[in-house]
Image (spheres, helix red, strand yellow):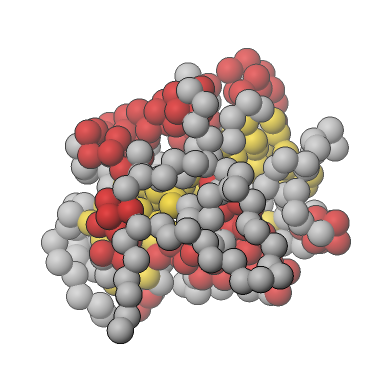
Amino acid sequence: MVVIATESPELSIPPGCPVPSHELNYQPIIGIISQPGDGVSGRKNHSTEGSYIAASYVKFIESGGARVIPIVVEDSPKLINEKLNLVNAVIFPGRWAKKGHYFETIKAIFQKILEKNDAGEHLPLLAINHGFELLMMIVAKDKNILEKFSVSTQATKLNFVESANVEDTIFERFPPTLVKKMSKECLVLQGHKYGISPEKFLANDYISSFFIMLTTSTDARNRVYVSTVKAENYPITALQWHPETNAFEWGSAAIPHTEDAVQVTQLVANYFVSEARKSFNKPEAQKVLENLIYNYSPTYSGKAGKGYDQVYVFNAPAVNSL
């Protein structure tokens, strides 16, 4: 007989095994915000209706030892808040936007995350690529803070800011040899047209007082932009680069797949999930099960030749794999 647990059982510890820390949550749930479209620029259904989550983000989180609940941007504010109450951390994959429903939804979720942390709940946030850009605009209170850079789907280096301390950051578990390689080898994928220069970052009091600059990168024209930041007083990290692609995406020849590059993916996943384990939000188990990403099926989109290899599509016309 197979028993399916719907409640978190008490841990049964075999004799001689150390008892896991009661200060950590070993069943963390990560909420991933969906992005407008279908993940392949409408190529699968010739439409930009609905929204999607790239399966690589889900695999990225699962590789760190957590499960995923999709937070769908088309849902009502009430339903979005209900899902936020089910999770222990949030990911903003992001999409380029300066106004409209998506921008306002991200802004509202970000404010909710700040409020929960201010109230004593540990709720980490990881913003990636365009999610980084959205946070810059929101925190700066300036939708025109970003500048154009020549970075279009290319692997780059990460140059660590000399004054930055990597302790208690996304890089804290990186071996020193890997940190050194990241500053000399192109181990992370960047894919964006906009960013923020260190000069603009430091000149904006809202951003410079909220975030600590950890790394910079250089575009094709040798212009420097900020590529990694961490909030000074919140468990919030923003990356202009993609940590998930190295191990889980194959659609671009620019994606680094070396052993070192894949280790970067794993270490970032480990760090973020470890932050989620510090959250003791433990909602009703059945509500979690009803909302997990496992209730949806991913679509293979890699044959389209552009975009992600697999996507979860929400609230859009049905699509078939190519």
